[in-house]
Length: 223
Ligand code: ADE
Image (cartoon, rainbow, N blue to C red; front, side, top):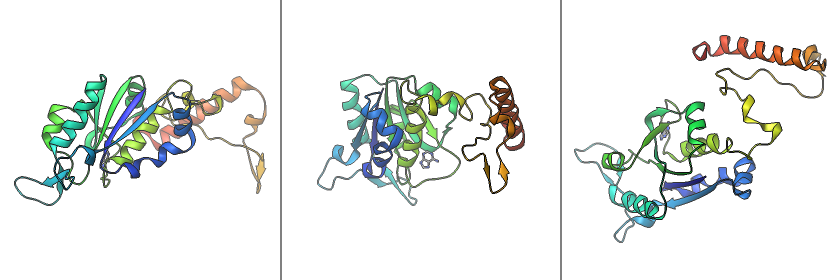
């Protein structure tokens, strides 16, 4: 998979890709992530990428021309499956969307800033608009990092057995059951006996019951 991220703040976006699982995925060449600074595609002396909105109102809008130039250049080099715009008015990101996107080959992710992008960018290029939740961030960069993490960890070979994505919360519409590690007793609080029994079919059944119980209590909307 290849992901091209277009942003006015590449420095805000880079660090999540330089640690832990995402770093390893890149080192193992399971994913390529490229950052494109929108200012490199601006025309004029001031490297302008945003402007006041027509009709008045607070907040700047990212201009269509630099974004057009950047996307068009990328599209000349390869075909993209999706051009995704991170925005609070997009469809809320779900595990289902992450699963679907993890099967794509080439993705462009466009990060909004200030008041967002000129509507013509959305009309001309964007194939999908994604929000990471009903709250407004200062820009799409942190949302793009969340989205990339959710999809990259699903790529075959990224996670090993211990971190397998198959037992994640949401993967089967249930929250994950409680987990414990050593010691088996801490300050008088014991790990449930069943987990120490070695009876794996029983443990599996207990985990399913716990997952269901937790989901009923915390997220009945998932059931
Ligand atoms: N940009 C600003 N807020 C956002 C959000 N909640 N999701 C995606 N992109 C955003």
